[in-house]
Amino acid sequence: MRAEVLIVGGGPGGSAAAMFLLKERIQPVILEQEEFPRFHIGESMTGEAGALLRRLGLEDAMTARNYPVKHGVRVFGEGGKNSWFIPVSARNERWELESGTTWQVRRSDFDGMMLDEAAKRGATLIRGTAVKALLGEDGGVRGVTMRHPDGCLEDIESTMLLDCTGMATFLGNQKVTGPKYLGSYDKQIAFFAHVKGAVRDSGDAGEMARDNTVIFYEKKYHWSWFIPVDKEITSIGLVVPRAKFIESKQTPQEFFLDYLPQINPDLERRIAGFELVDKVHVIPNYSYQVRRFCGKGFICIGDAHRFIDPIFSFGLSATMREAEFAIPHILSYLKGERRAEENPFAGHMLFCEQGIDNLEDMVDLFWEQPFAFATFVHQRYRSELIDAFAGRVYATEYQPSTAILAFRKMLKRERGYEHEDDYSIPIGSRYHPERAALWAPDSPVETTEEWLNSNLA
Image (cartoon, rainbow, N blue to C red; front, side):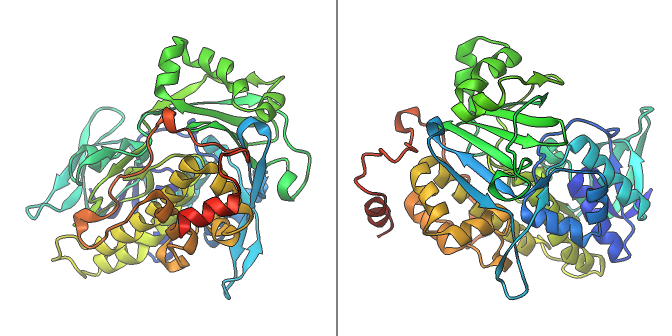
């Protein structure tokens, strides 16, 4: 079998890539091993993810499915004493901030909708599992060997292969890419489930909209998410250091139900009468990074090359945006351009990594200095952080911003991009219980402004 563009993985990244290619009159083949619907985490979209779906002409489909409308993210600090809010936003053609909305989605339904839409628009969908990457004499990827559901093997030849396999990191595990590293948060473990009966906010719009994302912070690397995914069901997750779970000697469900109310008083209030509607899922060691994730005949998209702390719900948005960013590079490659280069997509690779680096620096500053971060949200860098939470973190969006540069200074971090192997060194935060940062304003620092000025001087 022959495909001009082969997409391995039919999740939102693969489906979005297929629809963008179809707009350019390229008919891709999607290889997907799972039958949808299937459970998946990562249900909250940023503003830019919503804008991308609108560019694909899917706003009416999203509205028809009654997905919860998200107006922003609300974060509760330690002990429930403080909270701050970041609204969903957009930028107009004059780069002025405007209010906006996006969606929360139940991934089992949303992913199926995306894949069905890609097939309806002309993508060829094949059910099967990629088991081996096919390599040419020049070391470039020229397709995959797939296994059909009946066990038969077949080669699919391709000019371009997009790895959209998410955390399965197909090409990384095949050692086609550079090495795969555990990332900045490798000592974390996440528990999550869908529940009924959780109490939501009561508003129709703005900070108290009933379908907003809510994040609850207990202390460093101990937090929970609260994401409405339909009228009744809420996705609730708990993230703690792995050692905390091991010490408990409990089952995942026992630990989840026991520790969840301890995270934050406001969360305890919201889950007083909740009930599980499915099992408690667990992901340990979820942070990783695949180096050199582009090369002759292939590009890894989104989680297929990198995943950082999920606290601010960037994963789904980053995956779909990288799919769109890749399209012009794919088109030029299909025309024969840069075929002789060792890495025809080096520029795209660096562009994506710099964007995710900006996200990582923001997340790390939140963990290392949460009190300062909350102050930045309210005062010094509010517009820059509204952009970041919307997913506008790429070089074409005036990044790194003054906020990100300030965060790097506070983290005593430098990003080097002079050589291919220098980019995006995995240097983020790690769990240090002896250095747990304080959130509350009773910090030993005399005043917030003094502390910020002394650290940003």
